[in-house]
Image (cartoon, rainbow, N blue to C red; front, side, top):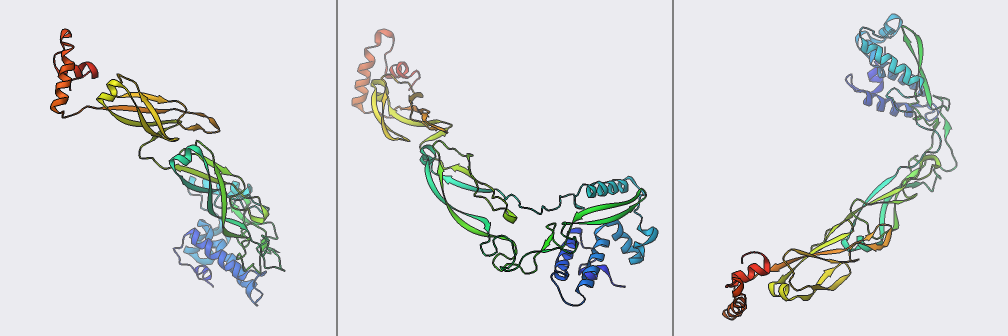
Length: 374
């Protein structure tokens, strides 16, 4: 009597996935629609019998203990010694009755299938994200094979109806229980649920009907995008199988940082350092913005850490580029750590003018001007 493990070419400790892969490989090799050699059909039936016995944990356990004799008669009854047995039994029954495979997944659809969506991560420069741009990208995605036009079969041939399932894409297996005989419905392992077998596959796509190609796309990046913005390009994902519609391409934006300018939403932030004389007397200085260099007026008497606003010099609002945020400039006042003798005399002369107000030193002058000792 042949050993089921040897028939499938697996070890006795092979897991369920290994068994399934071995069975599918052999089933395709010896399927009557593909293999016309004498004895191929008998071999195909022998492979199916071996897999049916080993795929179910209960029958596999009985086979391991008693051999093929343990699969007939009373030995074919499932072990109901604990509640786990009942749970597995009902799960198998209801899953099968609902048209699912033994692992709980739906059988493969036979008709056209929606293609998968794709993701593409795109790095964008700081200013390009603010004002927008057009970018050309290269994406790998699946397209319909031009040789077989998506059928997967060699030109001049076509798919054949699977003889295992009769084209239904499903196979049924009777399960004997204390409540009677139930039928479990599962995906056909010979055709993977498609109901068809490709005996002579297309050499260009290997029988898949689709090929991976790289495609150039020009995409429009709107003004105001930020890190995390997701752009959808309709119909540029993977093409669907069996003539199904393609999925979409989603472009995820990541904006590069700028060394001098910071962004928070639609607001731009930067800092500028001015001398204490500029802060006292006022001045006009040139600063860097997203629009280039502009003049910023420093009012006289500007205090340290004052924030000055440049209206409409920030980021355009996404979807409304006319409306822009502001550019906020933090003013840092630089106080000298050393002064010349001439500067000291000038400052002391200025300080003397405030003697009637008990300000008799340069430190008192700085205290009045800047609100702290210098």
